Image 1 (tube, helix red, strand yellow):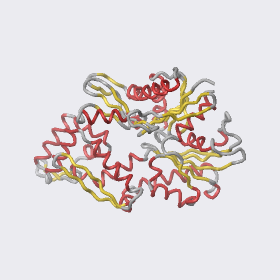
Image 2: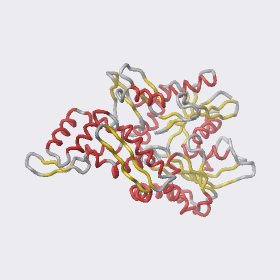
Image 3: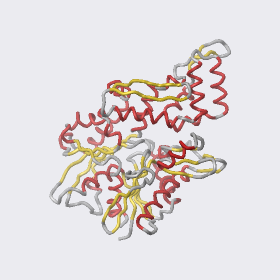
Image 4: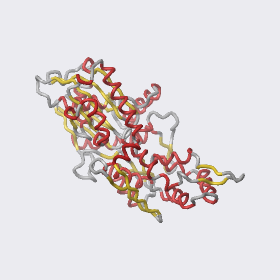
Amino acid sequence: MKTVFGLDFGTSNSALSILTNDRVEVIGLEPFNEGQKTMRSILFFDESGNVYFGQEAINKYLENNAHGRLMQSIKTFLPSTVLGATYVYGKKYELEDIIALVLSQIKLTGECYVGHEVDSVVMGRPVVFSDDQQADKLAEARLRRAANLAGFKHVAFQMEPIAAAFAFESGLNIREEKLVLVGDFGGGTSDFTVIRLSGSRKRQQDRSQDVLSTSGIYLAGDAFDSALMWRKVAQYFGRDVQHRNMSGNWLSMPLSVMSKLKAWHLIPQLREKSVREFIRKVRTFADDQQSIRNLEHLIEDNYGFFLFQAIERAKIDLSTTDKTEILFSERDLHIAESVHRLEFEQIVQDLLRRIGDKIDLAVAQAGVHREDIDLVLTTGGTSYIPCVRDLFAVRFGQEKIQQIDAYTSVAHGLGLSASMILS
């Protein structure tokens, strides 16, 4: 059997497995963060035109005092019909070109490991890139093109929660059969699959009859960070500011500006000359000039990435403690916002409801009842959040929930899928 890669290109992290001689191995991708199997899906362009990836990209960004272009969460743009090309220091890049750079780096790492070129890959994809079918098709076509640009001649796709299920199934003995619900939580999407797993059927070519349903929604870890930013931090950057217009009327800050605070990779869009001029004028007539100065500093110093890191750290802390703080300092701004777990759960209540609806949809479309589910497998960083785990506990019972490797189970399953799809 030829060598095939299983590539999990994630919103936040990416992982790679290698299928050779019927054996699947997940390899390390991060030489600058030893011991890590995954690589942050980040790239950095310095002002000399050099490109860096993963932890090295973050290191170079810090060394350059945030000068340059740091790109993260680029997977989230795949279904967008609005986003076109971007220019990086005068060079034009389509979205596929940027993603291809990341995939090329991963491909090179895998080829160095096996010692020869590999042109076949099974890539993971969420159940839905978008609720819009045309946008969903566009997203997969773009990802396929990016893989081709990276040098893969043979590209197949497997849904990420199905791949995670196959990773678990590989450990079943020949007599075991289970009806399983898989919840796969990435940075951008939450996906669910009801599937029959069997130790006697693993590695069979056609498993379509075993997949009873799939369901997904385009929100996950990044959306939780966004909600926390808006409710606990955005007030430091003008969310609640009122300003007088030329007629003397008091106006709120426009949502077209403030909404960019909800995602760190959108904040650089505020650097447009017209937007910065508008913000400068607002400061003159604002009831809270310091908040507008903070916003100007955020834009000028390009520290949105570091701010969101502080927010993410607080979110992670709340998985193991009842109270934490969002701590951040920059220039004359010092944030120390306390957050209780219960408060956080109230902030993300609507997100939890929408995710819960998709869990229920997956079970309903499978034509089974909740009590028929033997096991609930959860994977992805967001699956560690207690209120997310509670979505499954109240429906299926805590005893049925099993956490599988949060960051490499999908990649492992994609390698197993390669034996079914591309062998």
